[in-house]
Image 1 (cartoon, rainbow, N blue to C red):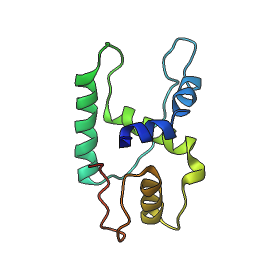
Image 2: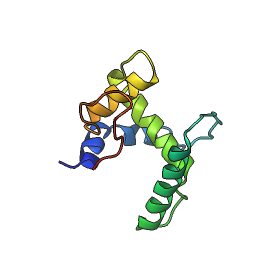
Image 3: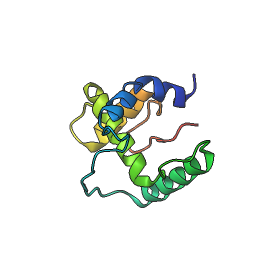
Image 4: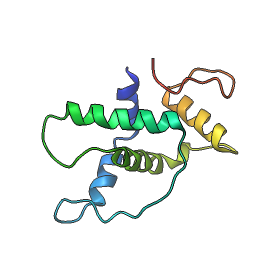
Length: 116
């Protein structure tokens, strides 16, 4: 099973969570800003992924942006909150990505966070 399918299976309830957050007009509820510090590689990769998803769309609709993907990631994390364990950011990340099957057993700091 590919990592994408594995990820989708883990977060199949995220779509219903997001649907509940929509108003009767079908538009997302008003959003509030939340500042997050991200690494340069995250910034670049997030923008690139948003562009790839925009280019791959089969139907027109709201634009897919880096902020769209951040909101999706937040919904996914909150939907799977019971699997977030660790004493700091690095442990939480390593444990969670391992749970998702996105990393192999390696020393902290040596993980490849992208599927191969």
